Image 1 (cartoon, one colour):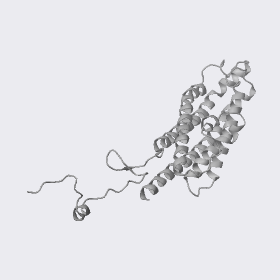
Image 2 (cartoon, one colour):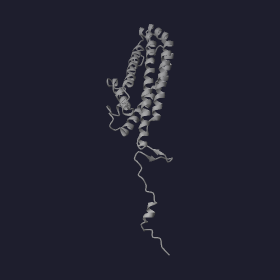
Image 3 (cartoon, one colour):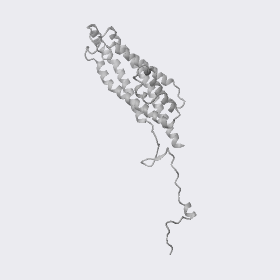
Length: 249
């Protein structure tokens, strides 16, 4: 009777029938349901969608603000004749819409910066040789720092787009940024006409131009938002294409 030897090397015929494990590529690891998942940063699709939605909500709010300005103009003109401030003029439809827009603007800013940060992290792994002209901190602060706010945010956005979307020219990003700068200029003008940032200074005869100012602002906002949507969608699709290419490779 033969005794099984657990330390005996299997014969060549038996060894040939044993499957040899194949190393898994570093970019394709088993997911929780058995399908492949990508190692490293995933496409920031959720943040991209959130940024687009919030951007359009803010834009819609600016359109409503322009409409509300038409219903508030008489109140401002009368307050200017009495030497009162924007705040002293009392509650107006314009002020009501402004209070609604304010938290939307903050939310849109936070989500957009989170999306840019996630997209830069994606590029750093998938396309490490891509050019990045500004450090990560400028994603959050470039929009507010005087002087550099004129061009740093554009460079941050354009670098992400260029590193992710192959062959896309800068025209769309440049047009988006010019509309953004025009919007900033119009908002600054509106602040001057409504008594400064806090609205505490007396209104002047220019109060009659506030409605027209915000109407033009709403027009630029619609164009800028459409161009921003194009940028975000392009980057999102580019990220998906890069992932699909890795999984196929």
